[in-house]
Structures are given as structure tokens and as C-alpha cells.
Length: 295
Image (cartoon, rainbow, N blue to C red; front, side, top):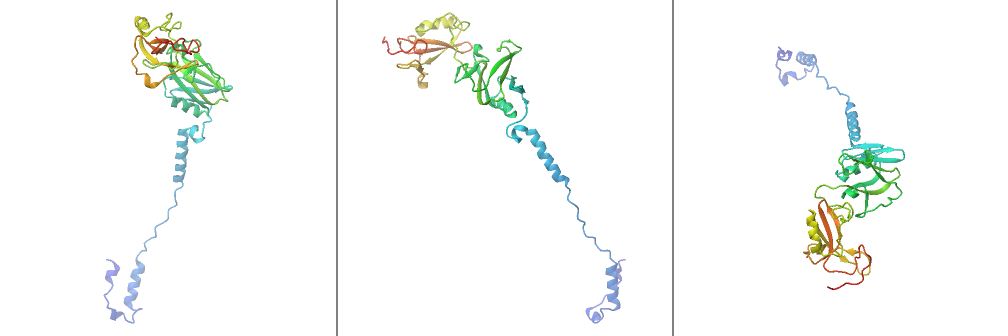
């Protein structure tokens, strides 16, 4: 039984002047006899929580890679599913693993090694696969101060073959360059270059189309199993060249229209460059044309 239950009941009047009486002394003794409730102990803060957070941040930075942590990357090699890039001597080398990859994947690789260049692989006719493009037409232009070259692996293989790999080389000092290189076109893709269809080895090899009418040229195109598309041009006055009005391209082309040249548009498709009337001289390939000969 609890010792408090053994204490006799008392009234206030009984306690008057009895602060040190027997009852008071018994109550004090009972209270003192109860075990005090211990104060809760303070636990030290674990320092490993902060350490774990720092470790997590560093781990995330390692996954993101040098291109994010240090601005542009400082690595000397990098590879993804599209391209492998590495430094060799005073040049950067690039082995194209997927010529049809998104250009962003090439940019990712160059950024990772700190190279400020842009690579764009464009569909082209077989003749210009592996060649450098510029401004929409194929040029053998100087690419600033960088020496840019393209090779094959294995050496001498046909770049149009699936087993032939494109190898790029350009100087380490290259900066701000935009390389446009021809790649094999997928079925149905239009060529970015404009090769003459009448040149040797092309779809209209040995057949001259200029100065003929569309009606004269179409039978030869059909005989070779080719399809045809048209580009309607406006020859420039007093100068070499022509303009192309996008709003005119849906105009029906008649058999009496005049053919200026034929280009390879895509695999199995020829593009005829035409006008709705005859001019005295071809401004594209034959020099300036000042006068119009009326039919």
C-alpha cells in the first residue's frame, strides 16, 4: 500500500499552528520518499546527416559531368551513342557512330571536351557523302583557321556503305565553327546538295535536257524509271542567276514549259528547273540573259 494512503485525514482548522506537527512531518516524509522523475537527457546532433548531404551533392555533380560543373568540359575524350571524340596530338578526332543521330548528341560530346563547334550531318547524294557543305550548296571552303578533314575507316571504303565509318579531324584551336557534312540519305529524304542529274554516273547520264521542253524530256525520264518534280524559276535580268518564288511552286507545269537543267532531288527522283517561256540564254549555266524571246 502507498504510504500516502496511510496518512490520517486532517482539516484546515486542525493544521492551524501545526506546521511542524506530527501530521505535517508525516506528509513531508512521504513526499521526500517518492523517487524524483529524471529530466530528459539532451542528445548530441549527429554530424553524419550533414556529411551525407554533402556526399549526395558531390555524387550528383559527378553524374552530371564536367560540362555542367565546370562550365564547358575539360575532359580529353568523350563518347555517347552518336559519336566518339578524343584528342590526339594537336587535333580533335571524331568517329561518327550514328550518322542519323540528333545533332544535339554531337553537341553534347563536343561540349563535354570543351570544344566550341557545331556538327550537322545532312542527307546528300552519293557523290557528296563525306563532303563539306556550306550555305546550302556543296563547297570546298576553308573553315576559318581550323584544318578540317574527313577520312574513312577502314581506309578507302565507300562512305555510302553501312560498314564504312566517318572520321573527322580538326585543330584543337577550332572555335565557333559550324561543320556541315554530307551523310547518306534515308529513303524519301531530299538531298541537301544539288547535283546535276545529267553528269556521268547520275540518273540522266548522257542525256542533255537544257533548252528542251518538258514534253520532250519526260519520256526519257519515264524510260529510266524515274519520277519528276519541278522547280519554277524567275531568271534575273542583266545578271547571271535566278530567283525562286515559293508562291509559284504549286503552278501546274505544262509540256511546253522550257527545261533549264535537271538535278538529283532524291533517290529515284529528278528535279527539272523550268520556266513558263523560252529565254535567249541560260542565266544559270550559260551566262547573262538580257532579252526574252517571245514565242
